[in-house]
Image (tube, rainbow, N blue to C red; front, side, top):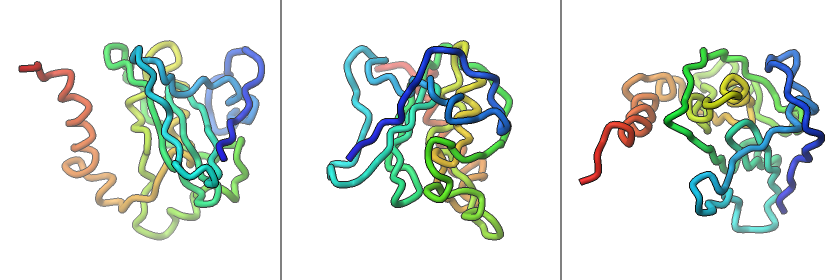
Length: 176
């Protein structure tokens, strides 16, 4: 069963911060655009319709969230590589107020152990256009995180290096 978080009104969001992120401030997020490439590329959802998921739209990406597991089942992001903006990292991880905190794997999961919060949608991917700062802030919701070993997540030559290589190779390579 897929539930969609309701969107209300069309007013602009206030500047994002832990203090101002509320159910209302997230209400107008459009999320992943399945027609961004021209051809429809649907948001992935579990094949079993009995698995409850909640679709959480953010700025330029969406999270298919499983409340029973307290983690995402899938994510999808719209990347406009030609218009990416360098936005400073804020590391302001927080709960998404649209889902009860008890259904999210928050700070206690990562406290006093070698687990790190690993972005599912990479922080640098949705940060383009007029809402780049909002997209950057949106990536720091616990709903967009998965537990990873700290040495793997923070290693410049491991995960971060691989992700950076994958994202820059298409820009610098030419088809043969």
